[in-house]
Amino acid sequence: MERIYRGLVASPGLTYSAIAVLKRKVVLEGAIESEKVRDVNAEVDRLERAKKRLMEELEKLKESAPEEEKDLLDAEVMMLEALVAEATELILSEGIRAEVAVKNVFERYAKQLKEASSSTIALRVHDLEDLATRLIGILMGVYEKEVKLLRGKVVVADKILPLDFMNLIRCGISGIVSREGGLTSHVAILARSYGIPYLIVSDLDVSTLSDGYTCILDCINGVLIINPRESTLERYRDVIAMYRELSRVCREEALKEAVTRDGIRVHVLCNVGSIEEAKVLKSYGGEGIGILRLEFVYMGRSSPPTAEDIEKVLEEIVNSVDGEVTVRALDIGADKPVKFLQLTPESNPQLGLRGIRLLLQYRDELLKPFIEATLRLAARVGDKLRIMLPLVSSPIEVKEFMKIVEEVENELREKGVRYSRPKLGIMVETPAAAILLDRFVKAGPIEFISLGTNDLTQYVLAVDRENPRVAHLYSELHPAVLRLIRDVVERARRCGLDVEICGEMTSNVYAIPILISIGIRKLSVSPSFVGRTKYVIRKLNVSKIKPIIDELIDEASTPEEVREVVTRLLRDFGVKLLV
Ligand code: PEP
Ligand code: MG
Image (cartoon, rainbow, N blue to C red; front, side, top):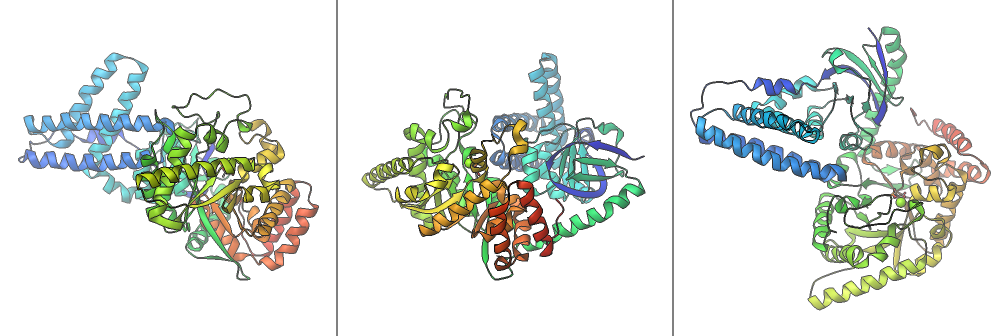
């Protein structure tokens, strides 16, 4: 019988397929007693190999994990070490198979932990169970077998762990649904960066579902339809077919160059916030990194990273990307605290101590190590590395920054360390920077400008980007924002500079024709949007749309009007739209 659930879209997409219920318990129960092993050393080696694989997965996950999950992953690594050490002893003393040894150790621990009867410890039992299950699964080759069973399916579970997700991705699943989870959870971040639709359905009773049921997973409207009836399928069939076709086209387009019909080349780079994302962007067609949000290097630590720590992360990223990498200096503040800074809570954090303002106040702890890391790395990688300053609102900030660059250069010279200056840019994300652009450019050796439209929009419209009560007023398509952006491009042109853009506006399909026609030639988007962005660009003819867009920016009063005109324009150019 058809059942319909509403849920929270954690990652967009649309698919119709069979479901597979994730059964982790089966693996654990499958590790049954069997005959003794002949070669205990070979068994210990087998366990070591499985541990190594799991360790690598945990390390990989840590790179992309949000701050609050990093400590948990560290704890899991320690737990895994202890589990394997004891299981190894059991194999050696009792001559049993590795799977059984892991299961026995887990059961002994679980019993002890459960007896402690505290809720925090109970949570640990789950973590331990996940690890033991995964380890046994690797030993039994379950995950290799799962590949065939799960290919193309929508996986449903009470909870999906990051480790599960990494395995599911290898199996080629088409979507995920879970009862528990949040939009900012690690799995949600991973699902978005891998382009897998993900719906969180809090009233889902997984025990009522079975493998072989079918579902429509509509992560555009936030709906899960289990066993859809023929009339529902009929309704969805065309939309799903169109979505599949569009996704296929976008995947193909992703690996091509973004050139408009009248021959204008546009570069599509990626917004990246972890090493993991940096490593996948090439496969999505990203031509480099337009903004590397460096916050992940600082979060979850009890002391600030040293120049060496920062340099190491940056080097790994620069080496895994073909094109240029633009690193945005740290942008934290009272709303995004880090453990090692005791920041006073602010009543208006979006207007408070963040971005370059905060960096200049913590120059020794934060700014100098960042500058040193980038100067040293630039000596090895040259122009491939660029840096940019967040939230500048006064040209004096650029001057102050340059003074510190000179200081660090002197120190490196005295120490005999090789260095070079990476290209310097500013983010235009305050109205002050947008209006006074020429003065900012004169304040230092600025070589590029990147629009941070997430912040620029909130400051132009006086709408807090994180306040759901005014979310309906927040739109990058607001004509005031568009006029200002057009002015910035014109002002930059007079200074002999190009403007690029890295705010989420680039992921808004209606913004693309506007940005291209006002002269922006470098867009940075989330990796999973590269294909769609290139698809749209390759359909456009800039000389034909420019007069329409100019008039629209001059005449429109509301974002709705803008969207309406651009929708028509995109249709005229044969761009298929779904959302
Ligand atoms: C922006 O403000 O548009 C931007 C890219 O920076 P963030 O979203 O990190 O503030
Ligand atoms: Mg910003």
